[in-house]
Length: 447
Image (tube, rainbow, N blue to C red):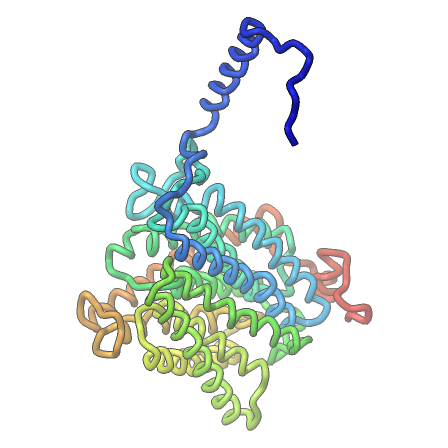
């Protein structure tokens, strides 16, 4: 529709001038507050790589919420199911904010705010700007993907002290842990830190995620003490929840390992393939070992074996072929099966959901086997040095990561105990953390 001119007289140019001067002054003031890069478009970003990385980030978050939450929630007793779900969602929230505002810069900061060992925060540019790139993807996409790892790592560690740590202690400890344990180790391995310069291989987090979470879970379980009503074999209250959560972990792991290539390329495709192969062999080997020992397989064992295979392939996923992945998954599952039985029967440590034998031991075995099967002689991507030399580097990295995690985790746990108290009282433990911490019950007829 054509509009006719207004019959009212227009303002003169002299009447416009004051408004123009005010608008110009306001625009200048706003420009001084907003960095110029804030308005730029990432013209050099690769759309395919960006899409894959964002999809992978969503898959890893899906592993945590609701994957780990449901897997752990089904494994505990029914009077503690809501507490585990609440802890997972709360820890994910805290770890996300810690990562965005501090952890990312401590892990992936740039000189002069970083050296091989540690980073400090550049408060003059503490937030990622629109248009900033990390390689061929927007830096926001890279931050989001790395944040998913920072979220799932402390969430995995929750299983070590399930059913007995107070909710305020969980929040305080995991927030501090994200800053002082996870961020420095991520910098050493993935942020051009000293372990990377030594040649340590960790494709998707066998060291940075699984060894750290397993070690901290064992330390926490030891310091907080055994459950008052601990049974010889933990009883899962809901196997359907465990199975659904385990399936979510399996599927989400494709993004966990495949996304670590940071590109939609051959390395990502191989990582997805090797991830699935290792999960399958891990599940079947655990099932066979349990069948031979107890004369029957179990659904929990089948899923635990799959997770053991997934953990073990994680550091090697993009460096090895399918045949090597099958061997890694099988060996990892067998070693984790033995470690779980040893910890349950010989150690006086109540790792409630077996985080240390599955994630801790599995991550270590996977890191060592990476030094073997990444060799071109086994169809891997190749090593800059010989197999024995690389295995030595991997072993050194394991010792450093375990040592730092154990010492700093113990310090943070003791500090948390001093400030807010670690353990729920005996009445709260008997009633269950659902009631003691949240005043709610997961089931009408809960214990």
